[in-house]
Image (cartoon, rainbow, N blue to C red; front, top):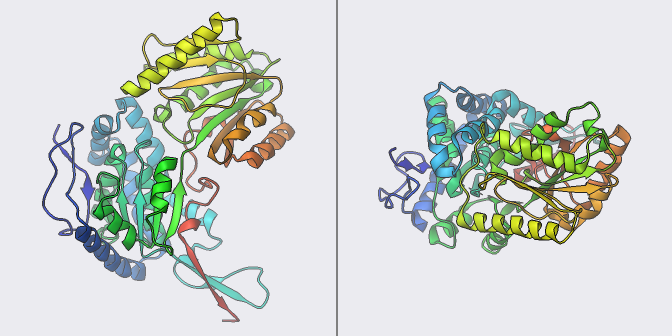
Length: 467
């Protein structure tokens, strides 16, 4: 396979020098501070033309035309994405196809318009002053996007950087995207697709990979940006905070962990296999690297299926899923962690604790049944199943996660109990509560980490008095 150029930028905006080819087939430009500043100037200039000539709805249509190509498995760009993702992102071919399908459905015109409608009472506010309903005396408002936004991606979930780029372009912000090394392919290919259907809009976008850290080029990008969007671990977030200008808007997506709660009625209709398959897919998607990937299942006792029975069924479902969505190869560090998890659980079981281990012969998946506890991050499709007497007890064990709690999937609860549990989960820090089947792919208009996907980037201007 030929090398993949990990950039897509307006013409003649980068120096010609390239790094040597890396083991995963990537190469990228050698950037310095001046190159970043020049790229920023080019993107700002292109934005002025596009925002004047294209409404938000027009941008949604153009972006949607590019995004739809990734849902067409016969499209050359889609085929290239399927070919490039496995070696660069460490995914199996089956997982790469599933990731592209799940991500690209939110890049279509219909979904983008729905996100605008959910986020703005009138999407035309991105184009002109509009009436603000319910305000005495008359008020018109307009929202403005950052002239230039910088997006620093992570390497956990492929497609996140492309989604961040789509959001910026949709609201009319030029965007410089530095994806994580494992998330290079989709934002680069998306920008190329956009250049074919709307070159004027693609001129507002630049995707360039560089090795993260404290380089002069990265600092120049931080200095040039009006807004910075960061995805990463807590250490990455802390480091970026210290390097941006005081007036720069920061949108931060830090480390998160997710879980699920299964009430007694989850299996009442004899659907154990269906429930287990749904849970297995949630665990397997992204090979459990996503912020929405569940790491623990709290299962009520006293139902038609015991927590032990569910754990066994989940293990069986993960085993079957391996033939459809094979797990990625684990890193040496992940392998060591997995061995420690299994051996510790087996020692606890041998000592008489209520612990049971279900695992693949290799490293593909692991299920540990153990008494309820605060969930710990898992890797390599490993997950813990915790019996609880009542569903609300999950809140007690999840509460220590606090601001790191992301999604909680629910099943088998009466409406009133679901409402009460959701209120408790929201109180302790959860930001998304949903059906088990919806866990892996939130809708584009979800309140990502407790805030709208577009609102954190927008600046509102009030025009007071009657028109």
